[in-house]
Image 1 (tube, rainbow, N blue to C red):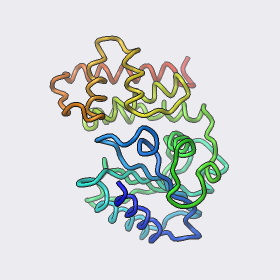
Image 2 (cartoon, helix red, strand yellow):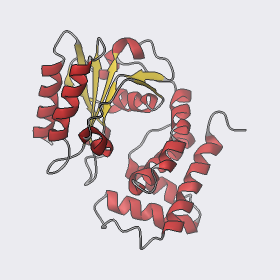
Image 3 (cartoon, rainbow, N blue to C red):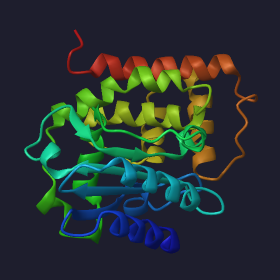
Image 4 (cartoon, rainbow, N blue to C red):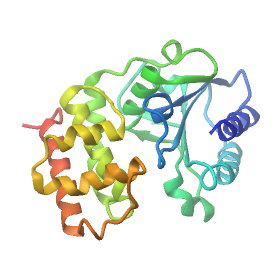
Length: 252
């Protein structure tokens, strides 16, 4: 992990040096429960200005060589300070690299800026548990995100997650479980903690799929959805999505 983090930090500082670079943070499981076998290295970058096309292409090309085997997948999110301070929902995301889009990057696609509801969740996580890699502490740079915006972001992400169920089954089930926990309790917790919480509350017929997702995430089992059954996976996802929708701010 250390070598990859150093490479990512060096890359960001090289392409967007100070004073345009405000801060870099590590967050997610690396700073909370500890990295699991399938955990990403989650890195959050704050800039004073937007990226130009050459910088976007440079980040993407270099991250293709840093992220993934033999190391860990890297998820790199970039925001411009003026787009998140003062806070507004949904906020604008300047750039995001994620290993799930590797094939698109290899075809020459480059992540662009977009309005991204999920930034509410990511920003909340960074402020709560982010570790400084460069710059001031996160609480001195980033805003406190209102709980209602986190809830809106969780609900907004459900359709996209369900659309990715076949390609990213483990992560979709765990993320839906985490969304349910967030709306029910107000806390953004780790994926395995969310699954543990949800398993105690799911109908018995939906538990095997989520239990398998958690076991794989923790490195306790090999991924094998055939043993669970595609129908059970889809039904579990639908049940979890239903719980999120029931608690969404605009429900009822």
